[in-house]
Picture (cartoon, rainbow, N blue to C red):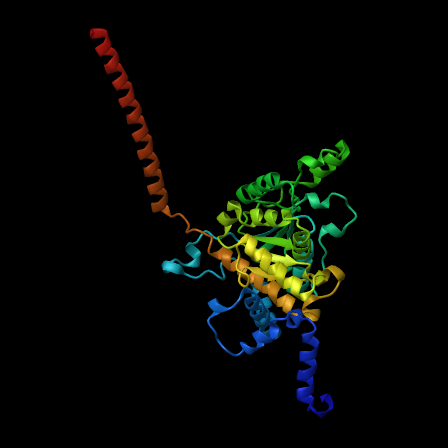
Length: 384
């Protein structure tokens, strides 16, 4: 058949054949039913969750070849505030938008946060400027995971966003996990920020001094604008099949935490290590996790295989994964842009000061009224 095609058709055939091997979902049992709906526009609400996932993966595969370069260019050229929509007539200049948008990766130990950062370098980095960068987790140091790491994945000093790789949480220490997350979301984060926990008491005095010297407050402290929850879909699904619901409950508690909801109403869920499961298990795992954490199986979760963990460049080996990652970062920036408030002008400060003065006078006169009331009651008792 291939020999009967023209040169143009043969090139197209080769391109489709090369990309087909990365479309793992096409071996799913329900895929034939999804193909029948490919050129139709049925009522999406009537589709089953499995068909929604298959249609979403087909959408990514359809857009990836042409849309990856365009979306990657937008992210490389991104400046803080570029995605702001002037809602209500408020312009970008009137908004309190920081010069650098901060995306924080949170998740449990082994979820793939560092591999995701490496994949971002591969997909979004400007080729030819800086060689491929690995996170410090690949170094020989034993304690690098105890530090927050700031990454400029666009490899540009003018980049409008950065990504923070954090220390992984433990499934059986959710109270301590949420307390540490609260400090990150409230107080902000900075590069080389030390993340010590109760289980680190075994460190020697020399180790503690080395860690303290490396963790420096001289780095810029950044407010977290958006958080991505990274989950190991293979670990969670295999534990679920074995009857262990602790990973599922832990990821739900983390994802549904008010701390993350306060930062952005719709946190993003990144599922990694899906290549360790079969097609049906991968879809079942995604649906089960989305059901437990109460997130849309198509618009809130991204299934991303971090191929750069093995040294492959994602944009050359798997365009679908590369586009899914770029879209996830793009959506995180869109969410961040909506979370800012207008700058306070002179009138706003005047109203704020006036309100504080009114509260002060109200409290002062309430105190005087209380004192006078008690004095009057005391005088009445003395007359009696």
